Image (cartoon, rainbow, N blue to C red; front, side, top):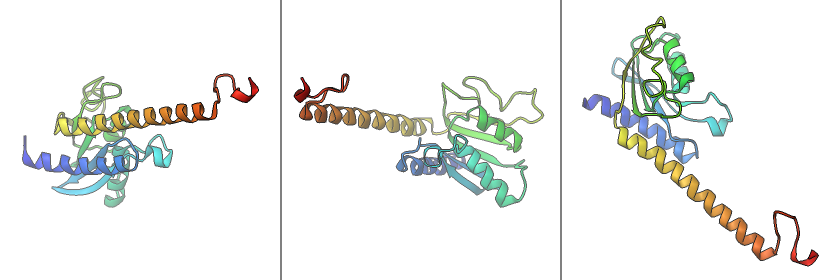
Length: 180
């Protein structure tokens, strides 16, 4: 694979890591125009409690603001996870030329996995799509993140169970040993 493409995906991975440190799903995106990064963003859905605060949308918003136009016709988007339907729509509407993504998304991927909105000729704009860029690194970010969440939840549940047994409370009936 082209070193240039990998270098830009590494930057998207760095954005994803920022999200992970904030307990956000680690997805990062950058937008490149004329071999310059013009926008970088990562997921902020949890911290902003905003359903549309996906990395791609935030990067598109920054790029449009920087350029003073909604048309990103010669731009390239690098994102660690395959775009969802919402992000794919924004990519098409902003006229991004080419999308590079790392990990496929079997639950919401709309750049080839579930469907391919980005290359659908029924739309008035299409994007070229390159999948699997540093796929293993991008996939590991996500699997490690969700593994850690499951581990943390299990530990919290075990702690609650220990606390309940120490106090003698039975959660199901709301009774304590004293009331029995």
